[in-house]
Length: 110
Length: 112
Image (tube, rainbow over all chains, first blue to last red; front, side, top):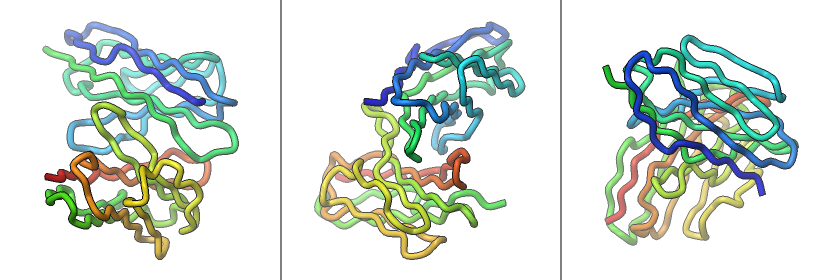
């Protein structure tokens, strides 16, 4: 069964304190791994898609990496506006469905 | 550029009543997805459509739930009769083939 586990559940960082969020997955053939950001009262907002082990993508202070078993979302020198829940999802081959993890709630305080 | 539009944003109703949630996907998107989000279970796919045809409804909890997509610009998710355990945030998302899904801002449903 395809499965996604995210850790930690919650993370508190001081502004400027870099850290990483983890997404471990099992899937019967990976078509893509997705990272989304969700703000309170809003829908998930797409950040990145990764397709194969070794791939990396960057956007401002965020960098996503992928191995055969997990993905990391690295946050460099975070700011309070980076506070949100970060969701990871996988899509298996031959399907259009996404399987989501339960997310990491990130708080960055000044 | 309009995103996915969902209505209503909030719905409070009594147990046993019929609830209808509405979604307008992004114009031109072939795929439409309905999700439910709760604290305990996170974001779960209920059903998705391709070109207005339901493809996979294996996530629909039970017969009380039904979804339709009468045309490319409109979909509904109906719960009849509603129960307190149906309380959650329901999201609609749409996408092009092999492209990321774009989500609406959801409907927060409370069943008393």
